[in-house]
Length: 639
Image 1 (cartoon, rainbow, N blue to C red):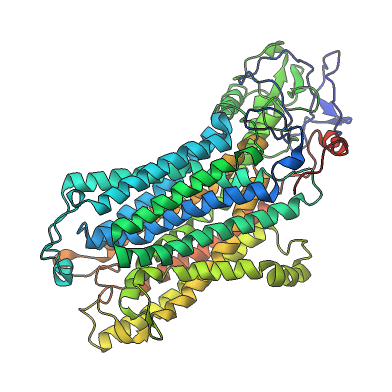
Image 2 (image 1 turned 180 degrees about the horizontal axis):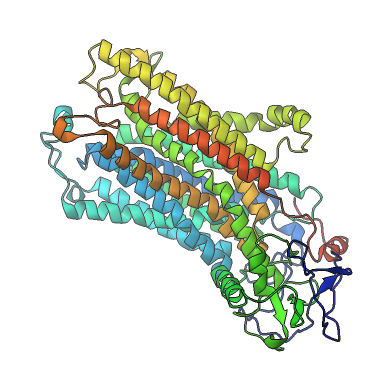
């Protein structure tokens, strides 16, 4: 397909539309693209045209000297914001279950489900944040607004843990009373307040998570020769900042909680979030921005409606002018370059069919551009890959609660040092930190010899490697849990499930932790880079939101799976304990891990099928010659 404009014929053809002399009457052949010359066409967005690769400043104006903006320096300010957000996220995820159980006197199972729902909402609602960023606000203002909401939620949680009025009485509530459930439960309004501020915090994460990685990647010039290398390293360092936040949450925050109480622990999260917000705003003059392209949901709806209206229109007809696209090298979508036509989902091409009856000024709900149609195709084609990571997120969610229950029964001494149980999830973070540190010096050179890929492995290959390691992790968890339960019964700990067994070390859990940490590195980092590069220019935040959405669904799926297993495997009338009994020594956690192993294998096979069918977007884009030519006149940027 030539990058030059193909004009519509002056005389409308009476025969089926052709391209390069090849008839398109056969359904399986490529469709011809005819660019209708009509600069007066009414657009749904009313924003004219823009080149997708052009960065602007915070006021939406072109940046005169790119060398003074963007690059790694700007990315560092963004790393700090993500580090604090994840510190708060993981700090709440690991401490809130214990807070609800020990302070609010809620059953362990319901506390776990409440936290899982919080984790799910904070990720699923990321779609809203991605939509607002791509459609109206831009990534910078979306982060700024939702980070403030996040801080307000953390402040509310701090008040709940600091003021006695928000907590039930702690008098005469020892460990035995907790086990028997005889402690004074939290009042309904107290739980309502805690749930409200918890969900406000989760909603605040909705605008941060889908935008931070995309906004950071926006700081690098895609016209640079080293753009791919910079992008690859950026996402690795980005996840390193995520891991650093998690490590701090699992160590320092836990230490503060033990020494100074729950109020100080949650207060430290609020302080860290406030400091990161200040750091983010300090970096404002350095940021490069991308213009929002209008409502992506509206564009998607227009394609679906237009395709439905023309569902009976044949691809070869005397009424057919061609597939519609605006003239020139710029897209009709602000913040987006043109996208070449593909043969996937041909039914959607009906939305771009230009017929004689459409006239010179058709409604955007009846006729869409090829680029607009291709946006929808890309969003559809991306779905299977993040969908296959839902189970990994489910496993990560289960580990935050189930492995903590396991650790309560084990010896957590490291020499003369006794680690708190809530510190145990730090070990996946440490394994992630180690793998990322060795990634370029060990993994890339070795894998490059095997795959001949310049970066060691493609994005989808890295996702697949991560999913494979998740299988090994849950398989080992099943093996060790079977041994742990047998040991507890044989040594008389069947009833005392909160009493640690001195001769069985908790550090056997490190194997499953390290394996899931490796899985997270390859899968999540590869997925974030894959979604950013493959998503349409004006939908980068929504593309990143796919990863967060998969994480949120995984959290909800964990709650659903837990409830289902408890109802199916337990029978209170017959005094039959469920697999996920609060007394882990009488439950059958190993069966649950075996179930996760089987599901992981099935999921991995589904991913392999989807990955083999997926075709990466072509490097060639409309207007690429214009970009290359203009590179000679563009100041060197800091990438």
